[in-house]
Image (cartoon, rainbow over all chains, first blue to last red; front, side, top):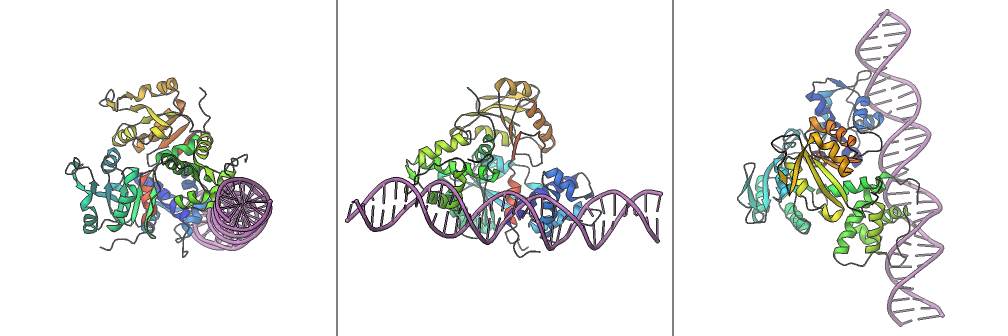
Length: 209
Length: 209
DNA sequence: AGACATTTGTGAAATTCGACACAATCATAT
DNA sequence: ATATGATTGTGTCGAATTTCACAAATGTCT
């Protein structure tokens, strides 16, 4: 029950939730910090301590009731509601994001797609019309969209991010491999597969040629 | 010049490299820990300390020569070579990965695509034929592919990962939202947009309905 | 009823990590 | 030459994070 929970703890909660979702799907009733720990490859003490920031969810000798703990985590993470998202950039990545089936059952939904290319505007992806970036700010406000997936080229990323903020977006997940600046209070995260790959190649023996 | 550099340091190096790549593209000759720090939103001392694990790359009063530091980082991360990769799963995500233009200039290249769906096998993406998963292990060995991008459904992820390891793959970047187990020494990283999103919604005020 | 096996939640210890601050060094200008 | 301003690399310290370890609580078995 802290005033402020460390970000590093927050970043682990979705992993716990993901494991619990899977357990619910398998009709598993009970789990323990130890089982979760083995599943996720971390220590059981860490899981207990992380959860203790928010309350007492388990029973000694028994563990945690899976559906209950899942609901608690969903509530903590504010994903006990469905969040509408916009995708900006209707290239190959934008298409994949709009078609991604993994959002629906995990509290997110793509409700709008924007692009600048006149040839793309009006086309539809998965039944959703691609809209012009010129109407984006207004549409975001009207639709009250608070989350955006940024899938535009590097050179456009900062400008589009500015527009998103102007449109009232409060969280941006950027796929552009460049650092973006946003005002205080706006959430920002990056997904860059190359960054992930380069962290791994450090540990690989170079190919001998 | 440590015996073992902390993983958290290794994970930051690709970000430094990304910034330096951009500087090289703009013909910038010199930079400083402070400039990099502002760019990346971290402290300059951290950058200097991170780099000091590997040697002395800067000059007092001047800073760092951009092309030199970039080359050093590429060497450290073993990305001064081109790594061949396999993509497993030729769905929307697999397609996007194969077509992604961001790999080429950052030391990675997709050389093979595998799927189980008989309808997909033989089709080609970006000029590359989709091959059957039944020949995957053998093909991986023949082609000496050491890195794989895993873009298959959750239920297949662990099995495919096992096959990849059997084929000699040493690093797996998984897009499947599930924990995978691999033998010691095999590098494993995850990209799950929902996990990233759920860490951000924690900080967002829930929508009032 | 009592002994036993589990498992939580959490203080305290241990470890890891990041920020600070400054001597040493370099480039430049006068 | 010398002064000046800039910047690195690093020792030190404090903060943040993780692990340890155990009392308290719960369920089970005899």
